[in-house]
Image (tube, rainbow, N blue to C red; front, side, top):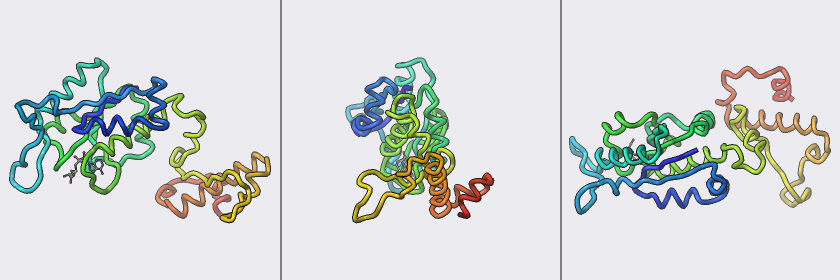
Length: 239
Ligand code: SAM
Protein backbone atom coordinates (compact mmCIF):
# COMPACT_ATOMS: atom_id res chain seq x y z
CA UNK A 1 0.00 0.00 0.00
CA UNK A 2 1.11 3.55 -0.68
CA UNK A 3 0.55 6.37 1.82
CA UNK A 4 1.20 10.01 0.92
CA UNK A 5 1.24 12.57 3.70
CA UNK A 6 0.84 16.27 3.00
CA UNK A 7 2.32 18.21 5.87
CA UNK A 8 4.32 21.31 6.72
CA UNK A 9 6.42 19.02 8.94
CA UNK A 10 7.34 16.05 6.73
CA UNK A 11 10.30 15.06 8.95
CA UNK A 12 7.92 14.49 11.83
CA UNK A 13 5.93 11.95 9.84
CA UNK A 14 9.08 10.24 8.55
CA UNK A 15 10.43 9.84 12.07
CA UNK A 16 7.16 8.66 13.61
CA UNK A 17 6.80 6.03 10.92
CA UNK A 18 10.35 4.76 11.27
CA UNK A 19 9.96 2.58 14.35
CA UNK A 20 8.58 -0.79 15.39
CA UNK A 21 5.89 -2.47 13.34
CA UNK A 22 5.44 0.52 11.03
CA UNK A 23 9.18 0.72 10.35
CA UNK A 24 9.24 -3.01 9.67
CA UNK A 25 6.23 -2.81 7.33
CA UNK A 26 8.11 -0.19 5.34
CA UNK A 27 11.35 -2.19 5.32
CA UNK A 28 9.42 -5.22 4.09
CA UNK A 29 7.93 -3.16 1.27
CA UNK A 30 4.38 -3.57 2.57
CA UNK A 31 3.89 0.16 2.98
CA UNK A 32 5.58 2.95 1.09
CA UNK A 33 5.39 6.36 2.70
CA UNK A 34 5.86 9.64 0.82
CA UNK A 35 5.79 13.00 2.54
CA UNK A 36 4.90 16.17 0.64
CA UNK A 37 5.49 19.66 1.93
CA UNK A 38 3.03 22.30 0.61
CA UNK A 39 5.73 24.92 1.23
CA UNK A 40 7.64 23.43 -1.72
CA UNK A 41 4.66 24.45 -3.88
CA UNK A 42 4.22 27.96 -2.48
CA UNK A 43 5.24 31.02 -4.46
CA UNK A 44 7.30 34.09 -3.62
CA UNK A 45 10.47 34.59 -1.63
CA UNK A 46 8.72 33.72 1.62
CA UNK A 47 6.95 30.65 0.30
CA UNK A 48 3.85 31.68 2.14
CA UNK A 49 1.46 28.86 2.99
CA UNK A 50 -0.97 30.68 5.28
CA UNK A 51 -2.84 33.96 5.58
CA UNK A 52 -5.37 35.72 7.77
CA UNK A 53 -8.92 34.43 8.00
CA UNK A 54 -11.64 36.36 6.15
CA UNK A 55 -14.17 37.89 8.50
CA UNK A 56 -11.52 38.70 11.08
CA UNK A 57 -10.54 36.91 14.23
CA UNK A 58 -7.41 35.21 15.47
CA UNK A 59 -5.34 32.62 13.68
CA UNK A 60 -4.17 31.88 10.18
CA UNK A 61 -5.61 29.63 7.49
CA UNK A 62 -3.69 27.27 5.19
CA UNK A 63 -3.92 28.64 1.65
CA UNK A 64 -5.64 26.81 -1.19
CA UNK A 65 -3.00 27.17 -3.89
CA UNK A 66 0.11 25.64 -2.27
CA UNK A 67 -2.03 22.72 -1.13
CA UNK A 68 -3.70 22.32 -4.53
CA UNK A 69 -0.35 22.30 -6.33
CA UNK A 70 1.13 19.93 -3.76
CA UNK A 71 -1.78 17.49 -4.17
CA UNK A 72 -1.50 17.75 -7.96
CA UNK A 73 2.22 16.86 -7.78
CA UNK A 74 1.38 13.99 -5.45
CA UNK A 75 -1.20 12.66 -7.92
CA UNK A 76 1.23 13.01 -10.84
CA UNK A 77 3.87 10.99 -8.98
CA UNK A 78 1.71 7.86 -9.23
CA UNK A 79 -1.30 7.34 -11.51
CA UNK A 80 -3.05 5.17 -8.91
CA UNK A 81 -5.99 7.16 -7.48
CA UNK A 82 -5.56 8.21 -3.86
CA UNK A 83 -8.30 8.27 -1.23
CA UNK A 84 -7.72 11.71 0.31
CA UNK A 85 -8.31 11.99 4.06
CA UNK A 86 -8.25 15.32 5.84
CA UNK A 87 -7.35 14.89 9.51
CA UNK A 88 -9.70 17.21 11.36
CA UNK A 89 -11.36 17.40 14.78
CA UNK A 90 -14.59 17.90 12.82
CA UNK A 91 -14.27 14.58 11.01
CA UNK A 92 -15.89 11.28 11.77
CA UNK A 93 -14.20 9.63 14.76
CA UNK A 94 -11.62 7.03 13.72
CA UNK A 95 -12.31 3.49 14.91
CA UNK A 96 -10.96 0.04 14.13
CA UNK A 97 -13.62 -0.62 11.49
CA UNK A 98 -12.57 2.50 9.61
CA UNK A 99 -8.89 1.57 10.06
CA UNK A 100 -9.59 -1.83 8.43
CA UNK A 101 -11.39 -0.11 5.57
CA UNK A 102 -8.48 2.30 5.02
CA UNK A 103 -5.92 -0.51 5.31
CA UNK A 104 -7.58 -2.34 2.41
CA UNK A 105 -7.13 0.60 0.06
CA UNK A 106 -4.16 0.59 -2.30
CA UNK A 107 -3.41 4.28 -1.79
CA UNK A 108 -4.17 6.82 0.91
CA UNK A 109 -3.30 10.51 1.07
CA UNK A 110 -3.37 12.14 4.49
CA UNK A 111 -3.78 15.90 4.59
CA UNK A 112 -2.54 17.56 7.79
CA UNK A 113 -3.84 20.97 8.76
CA UNK A 114 -2.10 23.58 10.93
CA UNK A 115 -3.15 26.93 12.40
CA UNK A 116 -6.96 27.42 12.24
CA UNK A 117 -7.10 24.74 9.57
CA UNK A 118 -7.33 24.48 5.79
CA UNK A 119 -9.26 26.85 3.49
CA UNK A 120 -12.67 25.20 3.19
CA UNK A 121 -12.64 25.38 -0.62
CA UNK A 122 -9.64 23.05 -0.78
CA UNK A 123 -11.41 20.61 1.54
CA UNK A 124 -14.58 20.68 -0.58
CA UNK A 125 -12.71 20.22 -3.85
CA UNK A 126 -9.99 17.69 -2.97
CA UNK A 127 -10.93 15.70 0.12
CA UNK A 128 -12.82 12.39 0.11
CA UNK A 129 -13.35 12.15 3.84
CA UNK A 130 -12.51 13.86 7.12
CA UNK A 131 -11.36 11.85 10.12
CA UNK A 132 -10.78 12.85 13.72
CA UNK A 133 -8.73 10.89 16.24
CA UNK A 134 -10.82 12.14 19.17
CA UNK A 135 -12.79 14.97 20.67
CA UNK A 136 -9.89 17.26 21.49
CA UNK A 137 -7.90 19.73 19.44
CA UNK A 138 -4.28 19.16 18.43
CA UNK A 139 -2.10 21.92 17.04
CA UNK A 140 -1.61 20.03 13.80
CA UNK A 141 -2.76 16.99 11.85
CA UNK A 142 0.65 15.26 11.93
CA UNK A 143 0.06 13.29 15.12
CA UNK A 144 -3.34 12.22 13.79
CA UNK A 145 -1.76 11.18 10.48
CA UNK A 146 0.91 9.22 12.36
CA UNK A 147 -1.88 7.42 14.23
CA UNK A 148 -3.54 6.47 10.94
CA UNK A 149 -0.24 5.33 9.39
CA UNK A 150 0.55 3.14 12.40
CA UNK A 151 -2.92 1.61 12.69
CA UNK A 152 -3.12 0.89 8.96
CA UNK A 153 0.46 -0.38 8.53
CA UNK A 154 0.15 -3.04 11.24
CA UNK A 155 -2.84 -4.53 9.40
CA UNK A 156 -0.91 -5.14 6.18
CA UNK A 157 -0.32 -8.84 5.53
CA UNK A 158 3.14 -9.71 6.86
CA UNK A 159 3.59 -6.61 9.03
CA UNK A 160 3.04 -8.44 12.30
CA UNK A 161 5.21 -11.45 13.06
CA UNK A 162 2.12 -13.36 14.10
CA UNK A 163 -0.86 -12.43 11.93
CA UNK A 164 -3.26 -13.89 14.51
CA UNK A 165 -2.34 -11.24 17.06
CA UNK A 166 -4.21 -8.44 15.24
CA UNK A 167 -7.36 -10.56 15.13
CA UNK A 168 -7.27 -10.85 18.95
CA UNK A 169 -6.87 -7.16 19.58
CA UNK A 170 -9.49 -4.94 21.15
CA UNK A 171 -12.38 -3.89 18.85
CA UNK A 172 -11.67 -6.56 16.23
CA UNK A 173 -14.65 -8.63 17.31
CA UNK A 174 -16.39 -5.67 18.93
CA UNK A 175 -14.99 -6.38 22.41
CA UNK A 176 -11.97 -5.24 24.40
CA UNK A 177 -9.08 -7.68 24.60
CA UNK A 178 -8.63 -9.99 27.62
CA UNK A 179 -5.75 -9.36 30.08
CA UNK A 180 -2.36 -10.90 29.28
CA UNK A 181 0.35 -12.28 31.58
CA UNK A 182 3.90 -13.53 31.19
CA UNK A 183 6.74 -14.78 33.41
CA UNK A 184 7.22 -15.07 36.34
CA UNK A 185 4.17 -16.97 37.53
CA UNK A 186 4.58 -15.64 41.05
CA UNK A 187 5.34 -12.00 41.66
CA UNK A 188 4.71 -9.64 44.59
CA UNK A 189 2.13 -7.94 42.33
CA UNK A 190 0.19 -11.16 41.87
CA UNK A 191 0.00 -14.67 40.44
CA UNK A 192 -0.77 -15.64 36.84
CA UNK A 193 -4.33 -17.11 36.77
CA UNK A 194 -4.17 -20.88 37.05
CA UNK A 195 -6.37 -21.55 34.02
CA UNK A 196 -3.78 -19.94 31.73
CA UNK A 197 -1.19 -22.46 32.95
CA UNK A 198 -3.54 -25.46 32.75
CA UNK A 199 -2.86 -26.40 29.11
CA UNK A 200 -6.64 -26.84 28.71
CA UNK A 201 -7.23 -24.89 25.50
CA UNK A 202 -11.02 -24.95 25.74
CA UNK A 203 -10.92 -23.65 29.31
CA UNK A 204 -8.39 -20.96 28.34
CA UNK A 205 -10.54 -19.81 25.40
CA UNK A 206 -13.60 -19.68 27.68
CA UNK A 207 -11.74 -17.69 30.34
CA UNK A 208 -10.42 -15.22 27.78
CA UNK A 209 -13.84 -14.71 26.27
CA UNK A 210 -15.33 -14.18 29.73
CA UNK A 211 -12.65 -11.64 30.61
CA UNK A 212 -13.12 -9.82 27.31
CA UNK A 213 -16.87 -9.65 27.84
CA UNK A 214 -16.50 -8.56 31.49
CA UNK A 215 -13.98 -5.84 30.68
CA UNK A 216 -16.09 -4.53 27.84
CA UNK A 217 -19.14 -4.50 30.08
CA UNK A 218 -17.28 -2.60 32.82
CA UNK A 219 -15.16 -0.22 30.75
CA UNK A 220 -16.99 0.25 27.47
CA UNK A 221 -20.64 -0.74 27.84
CA UNK A 222 -21.33 1.34 24.72
CA UNK A 223 -19.63 -1.38 22.66
CA UNK A 224 -22.21 -3.90 23.86
CA UNK A 225 -25.22 -1.66 23.37
CA UNK A 226 -27.58 -3.02 20.74
CA UNK A 227 -25.50 -6.18 20.36
CA UNK A 228 -27.23 -9.53 20.65
CA UNK A 229 -25.02 -11.74 22.79
CA UNK A 230 -25.01 -15.43 21.96
CA UNK A 231 -26.43 -17.70 24.66
CA UNK A 232 -22.86 -18.81 25.54
CA UNK A 233 -21.65 -15.22 25.84
CA UNK A 234 -24.65 -14.21 27.97
CA UNK A 235 -23.94 -17.18 30.28
CA UNK A 236 -20.24 -16.23 30.54
CA UNK A 237 -21.14 -12.65 31.37
CA UNK A 238 -23.48 -13.77 34.15
CA UNK A 239 -21.03 -16.32 35.57
N1 SAM B 1 -10.01 25.41 14.04
C1 SAM B 1 -10.08 23.98 13.97
C2 SAM B 1 -11.36 23.51 14.65
O1 SAM B 1 -11.68 24.01 15.71
O2 SAM B 1 -12.02 22.59 14.12
C3 SAM B 1 -8.90 23.34 14.69
C4 SAM B 1 -7.62 23.53 13.98
S1 SAM B 1 -6.31 22.66 14.74
C5 SAM B 1 -5.62 23.85 15.81
C6 SAM B 1 -5.11 22.49 13.47
C7 SAM B 1 -5.12 21.18 12.72
O3 SAM B 1 -4.86 20.11 13.61
C8 SAM B 1 -6.41 20.81 12.05
O4 SAM B 1 -6.54 21.46 10.81
C9 SAM B 1 -6.29 19.31 11.92
O5 SAM B 1 -5.56 18.96 10.75
C10 SAM B 1 -5.47 18.93 13.13
N2 SAM B 1 -6.26 18.36 14.23
C11 SAM B 1 -6.54 18.96 15.41
N3 SAM B 1 -7.27 18.18 16.20
C12 SAM B 1 -7.46 17.02 15.53
C13 SAM B 1 -8.16 15.82 15.83
N4 SAM B 1 -8.80 15.65 16.97
N5 SAM B 1 -8.16 14.84 14.91
C14 SAM B 1 -7.51 15.00 13.72
N6 SAM B 1 -6.84 16.14 13.38
C15 SAM B 1 -6.82 17.13 14.27
